Amino acid sequence: MRAVKFTGAGGPEVIEIVEVDRPEPAAGEVLIKVAAAGLNRADALQRRGHYPPQPGMSDIPGLEVSGTVVAYGPTPEKGAGRFASKQAQLPLGAEVCALLSGGGYADYVAVPAGQVLEVPEPVSLRAAASLPEVAATVYTNLFFDQRVRPGDRVLIHGGSGGIGSMAIQLLAALQCTVIVTVSSAEKAMYALNLGATHVINYQRQDFAEQVKIMTDGAGVDFILDVVGAKYLQRNVDSLAPFGTMVTIGLQSGARAELDMGSLLRKKLTLRGSTLRDRSLKQKRKIMSQVGANVWPLISEGYVNTYIDRTFDLEDAQAAHEYFDSGQHRGKVLLTMDH
Ligand SMILES: NC(=O)c1ccc[n+]([C@@H]2O[C@H](COP(=O)([O-])OP(=O)(O)OC[C@H]3O[C@@H](n4cnc5c(N)ncnc54)[C@H](OP(=O)(O)O)[C@@H]3O)[C@@H](O)[C@H]2O)c1
Image (cartoon, rainbow, N blue to C red; front, side, top):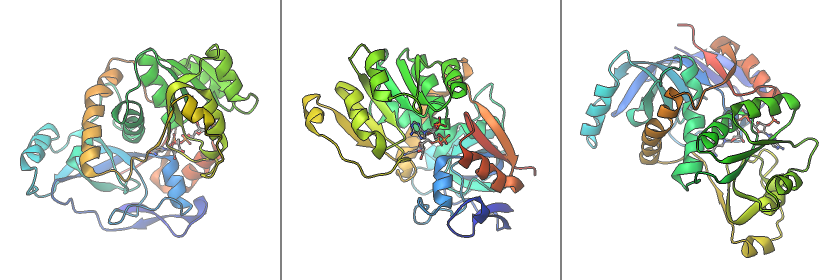
């Protein structure tokens, strides 16, 4: 089968399409014939040599795919009943999407059955590749590890990215006040159309000052941060008493200085989180809750997926160049022409 490999650490030029053996599904896994794979910031980090796959996991990049179930691995010794019921839900030929630990930029991928969900109506098979990683990440950080409540005021950094687009829609469905940062008027319009209450152009405005104005000085209850070091102090300044911030990306770096006084006075919680290295058990639980809680919102029209551009697998280099340029709104996909 065809797959993407990185020939070293660097820019899109390290991307090569190679021929490799089709993976054999292990016990408890299903084999998916891939229709499309979603691009994620983590793939670009892995390409630059900063986010290697977990030991024992595929070194082919790609954390989410859609496709059809074409084979099952052997029945596992432990959890055989659960595997059998998953097989019944996902028969051969079923159209599915899956959260992966790697291996998605390829014609076929093997994945634990618990990380596979049916494609939700009315999403197309290809477009469904855009859902698993962002839905699982946003769900984990807003509702699984802690619980954002209806009506909360929430600040989302990067409102036009894959993660931001999903977060805005889930929070809008919960009738939260959603404040987002973006880098252009075009991206501001995009975020408002998704359901954001207020947008801040972080290139032109100090987001902490704007949050103060937009919340009448009260601050926000929750921040989903993908920026890291550069925003730490201003994020802490923007939180309301008893507020929580979860950092899931470090796009501006990992080292920062913080005046900890307000952390104590406001009784804040600062957390960090990664999805990729969670246990199979946690990923199974998260995907099961995503299926139960997010998929109905998609089917009822509260949440949509936004595909900015699709590229053929053979054009993976061009896809990464485009993704690196940061022009996209929503998701970028690779499609497999079998
Ligand atoms: N920890 C986890 O489990 C996990 C899982 C998935 C993703 N992530 C992280 O989540 C982030 C988003 O991932 P993605 O796949 O959605 O990537 P993406 O589509 O490329 O989105 C990146 C977003 O970051 C925004 N951004 C960059 N610098 C910013 C700044 N200084 N202020 C405000 N926003 C800024 C961009 O906004 P503009 O385009 O407007 O500049 C863009 O919306 C990445 O950092 C990724 O590593 C973490």
